[in-house]
Image 1 (cartoon, one colour):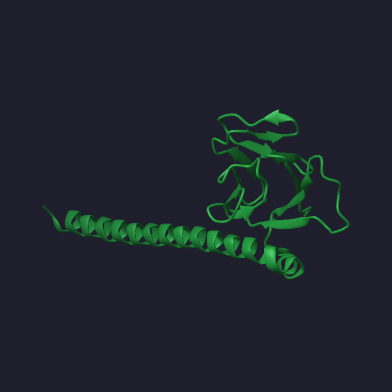
Image 2 (cartoon, one colour):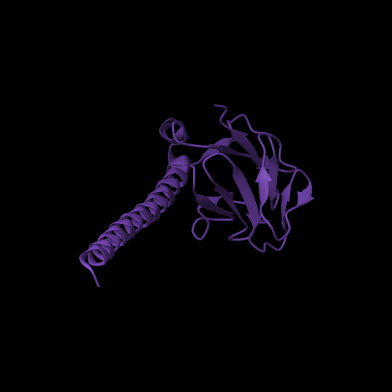
Length: 170
């Protein structure tokens, strides 16, 4: 084995180690970012229940959009503004009857404890049914096994509660 082969092998080993270290750090950073987004989304959901105006101002710069929680079907629309829940990018929020176990409570006896999940990437929002007895509906169409990509203005129904998607226009 000549010196050139030894040096080439050493160089390849060093490059492999450097690339592995770089990719490992990126993966850890990505996992930490997802964890941070999830924690932030849960804090938003809690703040929405106690101080909606503050929550909207806090979430506006980062949110993909909002879920506007309307009155239940058959109940007259109240004079109060509907609750708006920010949807952070790259996050998953569980909707249900009460929190916990749901991240966002709709206070609806017809909703399951963990009824549906709303999740987003950096630009799109999706809904999936979590096996709810009464099903999850988007614009009067039942959500089946695969998640449904939502568009601005789509209405999601869980139990007897309507949730309207309001996307940010950029």
